[in-house]
Image 1: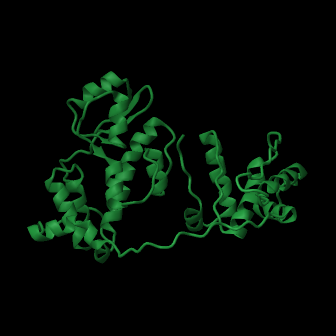
Image 2 (image 1 turned 30 degrees about the vertical axis):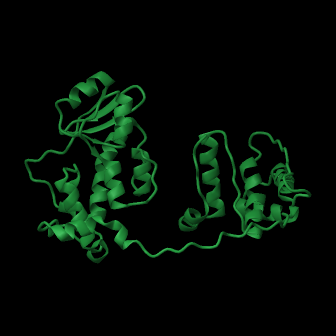
Image 3 (image 1 turned 180 degrees about the horizontal axis):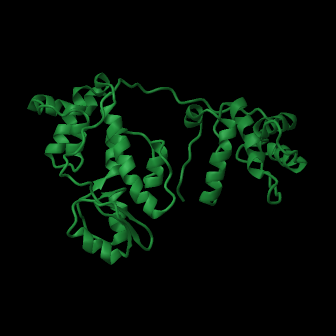
Length: 307
């Protein structure tokens, strides 16, 4: 597999810009990193070539700046990996691409170059048969429409000659390549089987693994939470358990244990609502114990944000 074509020797790399809450990290073409105030960043943008950034709309909103041309790595990610989820930040893109996670604003600005290189390599190393003529046609059409990434994308896929206008239009008609889809019957309602306390304690042991610290309070907490999954006596009156435990007991796994059991036994989904993002991240991490295979976790666990 070939690497993406290198830029001409006289072509300098673009500047990189990451805007935080109170300042901006700026990397010039020589690789020098600076922390700038918003006014200075906007002043430089008036005279600099289009910078590398992530999430142009959010960047302009934080700077309180009008439109300025930019090389948005989020756009490139959407082109290379359409319909694939990522958190729209340099950290999120780095995680999605398996790159080192940047820790500071300066690291995030430097990561934009690594993200760009990884995405262009993905294009250059893709199976030509998988890419098909449509991608070539779409890339040409977007380049002709002055998409900032157009030239780089065409280099990565070996642009060649411009496609015939008829092929160009065909490449843009993506709906012609969608698979046939038929309406399916709705999924039946989940079952109403209860969760046994003994099974809950056994599931908790499985989640903790061998060598884990024995915490009777955690097991008692999980067993108590299992009662919330008992069948209702009357419609509209679900079982409710109000449980409290001290810090360090292990409450997260305490309710994941009965919830995961109920989901498996009854073929249903369980919603776990949190108040903070920190707890949401903690839950997501603990679910690695339940689904150690990343592919299976991706199919079974959904993180939803909102109010």
